[in-house]
Length: 249
Image (tube, rainbow, N blue to C red; front, side, top):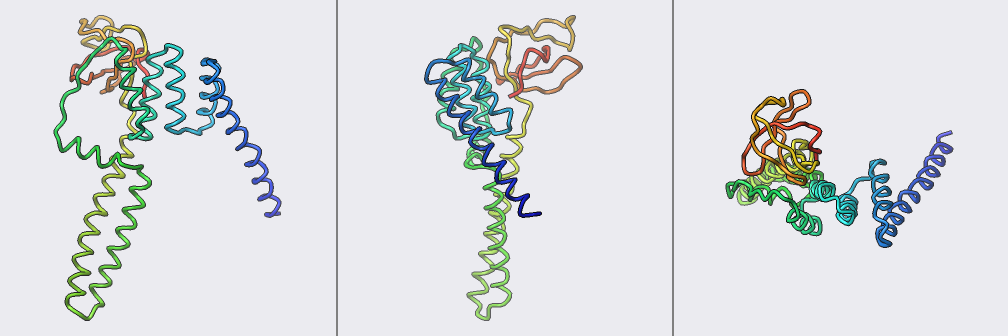
């Protein structure tokens, strides 16, 4: 009975995987032919199956750019970079598309150590950081054993020193994995999705007008009250706007 179940699972996988591959190939072909609306539909259908990847978001971003949908393109490039912060093509295209937006907001300068830490934990994925951390911890345990059971003093000192170093870097990689995962799970970043929206001083239409934002501008959601979201722009300005005016990255 188990043998039959295994054969059935293999048959299902063999039937499904080619369909996904064919869909991706078809979407790429449609894009090459200039059929951008059809290509976008195909790419979206792949995303709906849960087969997400940085390259898929990147391709969809390119498609939306070709369709003249700047906000959609920015959203997809940002999603690509969420999965792969070092995706150079997505970085380049995002920077270019952002030059086409109306709002030119200069981000608040970060402390050097913050930027340095982001550079470190974005070097790879949370899973790889976790594997490295576990490996270092295992080496640490081996070094402890080496320290406890070695008969010569220099070997004991070496084992002790190596155990300390491995344990320290194991902790660092744990923090890297945690920071990268937290960044990937962050749902507070959003893109303004309508041509123009006026931010308010309170979560209702009776609030005072503060400033105007345009399509494609990146904001951070600080809180949500009913149908309103309190947002913060990259230069630190805050205000309220309808939640329907933004799309979470």
